[in-house]
Image 1: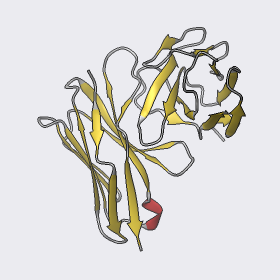
Image 2: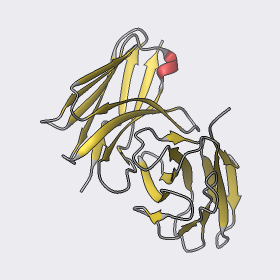
Image 3: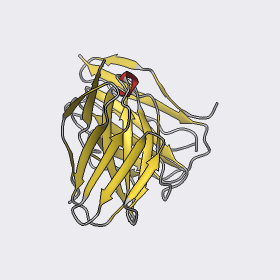
Image 4: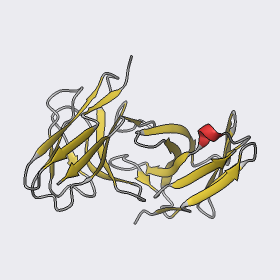
Length: 112
Length: 113
């Protein structure tokens, strides 16, 4: 079955880099996603990576994918207080319904 | 302004009552989804719809029902059969069932008293 796991909490200082990690079990995952959720709000898609890629960079965000180990990470450079939120890793497979399977989320706290 | 709207933002109901949550999108997307979020957990899929007049059960469909009579609208009814309905409900849409980007609405927090 599908399972996506993340650590629950990460605290960093403003200006440092943040690295949020995720592991997944479904080897048929096609796309892997990072979403951001601010308190009481819906999810905002930050970035996604196709499973045949190793890395994707988008401004302050860098996604690394190790398909062999089924490990995904999101690096946020120069973390700001506005980056404080819950970050969800999610996967989809190239079959059937295409709905996403989510991890339980990592709460990022940025200290001034 | 294109997007997904959900209403109301907060909803309170008495135990035993059915309640319907609204989800509307003006993105011209074919596929729509309902997820449930509980504290400290990820999102779980309740129902999804690939196209008008079609919908499929997700992982936790028991106690819920949906309809898809219009492309723009995908309302979710939480019935009295749902044993633990208090949660945050999120609606999403994508261009079609193969679309890689799902766009989310702001959510409805349902509290059953």
